[in-house]
Image (tube, rainbow, N blue to C red; front, side, top):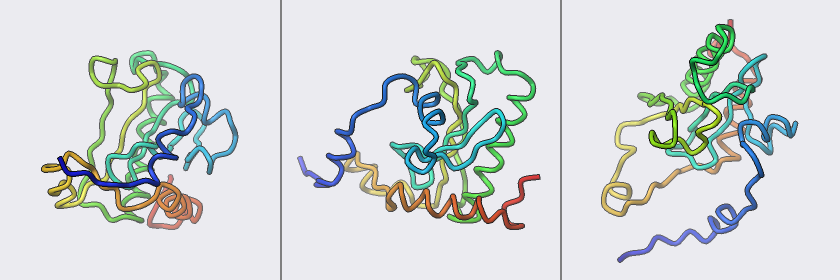
Length: 167
């Protein structure tokens, strides 16, 4: 068996995990940069995925701790879709992906890591982003550090230019 060594990952993997639901704890902490929260609406927020499938993997989630999309108010549903739109717009402006995977895993059986708090994954995709490392070695290489991805996306959101409309 071949090994791919990335010793810098150990500090990341062994970091203390927060108690409780990350979709409740992180927005309540108030330090958006440390918690990788890019955008706060009235009812939903956008944050980077700490274990990204690709650089720029975002999640849109309601602030309210709910698991079932059928329990969402009309306003929450509308703002959730709006959050998805903002995520697509900023990723398109900054990273120029060629496509997106967008989806929800509802329930543990469906693969939800946090089954009690619904969230939508937005994964930017590029031609060839599944290469020999993922196919042959079972290893995903994410080419950019989370802090750098956060900086780029946050800067684009804060600029609020015409390329990233929020109306």
